[in-house]
Length: 197
Image (cartoon, rainbow, N blue to C red):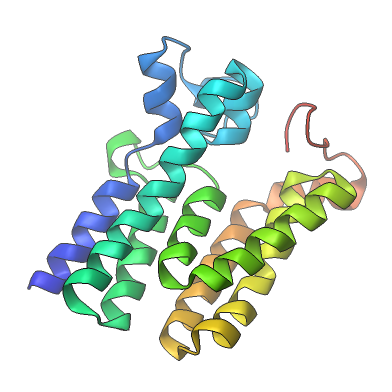
């Protein structure tokens, strides 16, 4: 029962939308109603600037890391850690507190991977930075980085359970970026620093 409580707690933490909370506190409106309509750091950057976006990014990252770190601390069970990470991640995608209208999960997913394997997170982050720096597309960087993430986790964490959980994150990330992928294919995707990404 305690393991289930940890997973539920992780989902509830993940359901706290940093973008919506930050915008409400700063009286900036609902990020789901402006820009790309996505409640994430990239859209907050577009709507409100670097400060609010940075706070959003940190909030999304931390809510992925903390529940998993707690699960590791309490149980040392990779299954519980995997389930808690997935719960926090899908809480971000489908937040119970905000009508299940969540973000695309990149920052929260990275936060989860950090708690699963810091070295795998470092490799994933370097991949993101390399692709973003080379091509200037945030969406492309996210898709490529998360496509590599299960390989990094398998290699650096040596855990089939965490590798399988990371693969689920990857599938969800790619699905949430499906419209971006279409725009990339048609040359209509906006680069970092412009509008939708």
